[in-house]
Each structure stands twice: as structure tokens, then as C-alpha cells.
Image 1 (cartoon, each protein chain N blue to C red):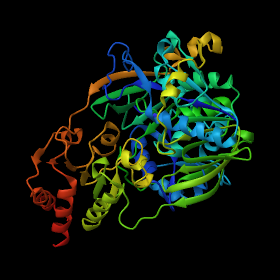
Image 2 (image 1 turned 180 degrees about the vertical axis):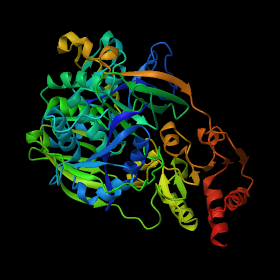
Image 3 (image 1 turned 60 degrees about the horizontal axis):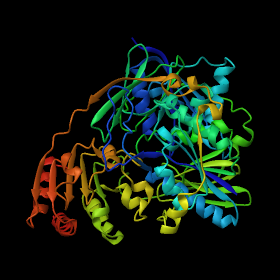
Length: 259
Length: 322
């Protein structure tokens, strides 16, 4: 079974991001890391291939300058190979542009199953998985909290507003997974060493046969009209607990007459 | 200047129209001359409630027989527009829900138009503009669709106030789902609802949420107890949902529920961006955390720097004894 996992490489969340006022894009000049949300998909893929008894996990990512530092983390976890798509024309791509690029890169792999996170930690549009599925003509099950493959079909527990649905879907298919679907492994030392020599295919738009006018700022179909500081919430009183803080909370609730 | 027509994606919760749908209808009414709803299922069941909230027409697909809404609804809408059976609206509004995001993603590909996500406010210039909070709500970004095609906007729950306007029952029209083939092959075989006693998380006047600072899953009982004694709903940060301490239905945040209660009590929650986005709109926020530098204190009306294991039991006892 061949599983392709979409992974995003993002600026370290510990290093707060900023929007570049000139280009109106997220600044990505610091080193990129594997989006933690994607580590669940990578782990899920590795476990499904293990359970199937054969096959491999391939990663697909889009990032500037053939950035692979985040991909190496996922390769160190056990993925076999990766594709990185970079092209100057991709700057400013919206979710649909991103999906077009990832879909074209995924199609070359002819996977049985495509996994993605439900949303990235930095952009969180949460629409890319459904867009990729539509572009590839695949059925999709999004917001999975459990995934198993049995007899050529995916069996998925899909989160709903009320609880969850059990969904069955014949392969090939796309499934987006929530954080918590599995516990991602830490890369072993051996895995980290092995990752350095695993194959990473570097592609640009020409190699994927995508017209640059379809993606990036040119193909975006949306324009940022303003970026403004939001009105800040006024900070209140902060006190140190001296053993009687609960009385302050009770008084606060009494003042509001909510009890 | 307003728009001619907006389509709102209709969703259902239990036997009623979901709040997110009614909220979007309120927003749409102020932005466009004509507001219509498109939805899965049988629109006749909801025409009265949707009409009361200002929808003139409800387009519905009928029973999907286990099929998922995303692919079916998007395909039906695209087919109806392509055939000329219905005139395309100027914009689509969908809720930031599981099915809303599925429909939006699929529809954006079919119409080759972009999706503007996480919208909390809308305004009309020459076209519809959506406002999205980023970086934990410290920055507002306004975005418009410039493709010349109908824009798709994913609206966050609780961004608008639902309000009936006494409208007449909406007209109902069929929205035929074309033959989907393999792409429609995913089927729901069973549904599970997670029941809880007390008030619902996104409707409760008081929400008590716990986070990693509780230290261990057993300590969550303090959150439950406090919620019970104040008549509120228990919630959680993503960290402890991911860790499996409580189900996803408890999660407050960017992923999870958006809550705007009268009082929000955050116990052992540091206040990551992902969490703040889901609770910053609360009218009053009380935070208890050991770390005086925790970001949650920047939004708290009353911040207690202290150990939740000491403060919470005393608080619960004090309230129980009243």
C-alpha cells in the first residue's frame, strides 16, 4: 500500500510570526520545521503501512527554496521518500493554489491513500484536503479521529459537531486526520542518520505542468485590503494566591450576579 | 451599496436549524437584497425557521443516503449553476464546521474561486470583504475575492447575533445531486452522539476549562465539579484533548468550539493562540495559572497566579457550602 502524506513546513511557533507589510505574506525567513499537526498524519501512515505488511510512505510538501529541514524530521520518523515543490511564482498562493500544486505532485505517486492534517498550525484554512480530493477526483473523509484500512477500504471515525460518525470509503481516497489520532513517534538516532540519504525529489511548476498564472499572487483570486492591529482586550487585575484567592473569585462571580 | 444575492449553507443540529446558519442569515440580510439557503436533507422541514430568519428560498438535496455532505452539496450547487437552473449568487457563506469546510473546499475547485477563511466580520465595498483575526486575534486582516467569480467565505461560529425577522415560510426548491461515481463513495454507516447532562458548551453562561496545568487526567474532576456547582459547562484546551484526557467535544479553541459565555474560567491553561481564539470573546475571564508570564493573563479580567490544585478545591468547597 502506498500512502502519500501532505506535510507543511512552517516557521517555529515558538518564534512568533509576523506579516510582511510589503508582500502581505507570512514572513518565512527563519528556519522551517515540520508542522506538529502533520506529525500525526506521518505516524498514521507509517502504522497503516506496517499493518498492511507492505508498501511505503511518501511525503509531499510545498515550500520556498527547496526547504527540507521539516521534511527530514518526517523522513527520520520512517517515511521512505519525499517530493518538495518550490517555485518563486508560488509566493502568495492561497489554499486553492496550494491544493493545485500538491494535487499535481501527489498524482505522480499514484497512491492508494492520501493523508493530510485537518489544518495547518499557521494558516489554518482547513480547506486544502477537500480541495486536493476534488482536484484528484477522490472521495474524502475529513476530521478523522481514527483510521484503519481493511479489504481495500478505509474505515474512519469522523468527528462531527455532535460526536462522531463511522464512515467507510473504498480506496483510493483522501483522509484528513485530527491531532490525537495517534501518538507520533520521536525520530530515533538511527532514523535521523538514515533520513539524510533518503531521496527527495525537487520539482518546480514546469515539472508539474502547472501554468504559473494559476497559482501565487497571479492566480490567487483574493486580495488583502488591510492589515490592522485588533483592539486589544484590556488586561484586568492579576493577583498572587496567598491561600485566599478563591474568595476573590467568589466575590468576582457575586458582583456579576451569575450564581 | 449591497449585494444582489447571498447563499448561506444550511446546517442542522438535532431537529433544528444550527445556530451558525441563523447567525449567517442575520449577517447576510444586512449585506444583500436576497438571501437563500442551500443544504443537504429535506428543506421542507426547516423552511419555516429559515424563513423566519430571512431566507426567501431553501434549495435542498434530499436524503444523501449516508453520503457525505461536502462532495454531494458542492456537486449539486455547481451543476445547478452550470445548467442555468439557478443564477449564481454574489457570495457563499458557510460555517467553519466539518461539513462547511468540506463543501467550501470542493465548491472552490468546481467554481475555481478562492475561499476566504476564519471570517468574523463582513462588509461590502464593491464586493464582499471578510475580516479574519490572526496571531491570536491581535491583528485583523481584511480580504476580498478578486476573481470575478462568487466568493466563498467560511464564517466562524458566534461572529454574528442570530435574530428572527418574522419572515414568511421560505419557498423550497430541489437541488439535484448529479451521479457522483467513485468520488461520492464514502458512506456513513453509523452515527454516535456524545451526550452530556448540564448546559451545552457553546451555549452555557459559565464555562470552566482545564488545561495541561492540571497535571494529570484525574485532576480534570475539579473542572467537572466546579462546572457543576456553578451550573456551567466543562471545557478543555487542545493539549489535554490531544492527550486523550477528555473527548474532542470538550475542546475550546481554533479547532473545537468557539465560546462567548458571561464568565470563562481557565484552570491551568497557559493561553496558546489556538485556545485564545476560541474564548477571547467571553464577557469576563478568570484565569488560574502557576506561571505569571502565561499569555492567558493578558486577556484575564481576574488573574490568579497560583496552583490550581490549591485554589480549585477551596473554590469548589466555598461554592458548594452556600
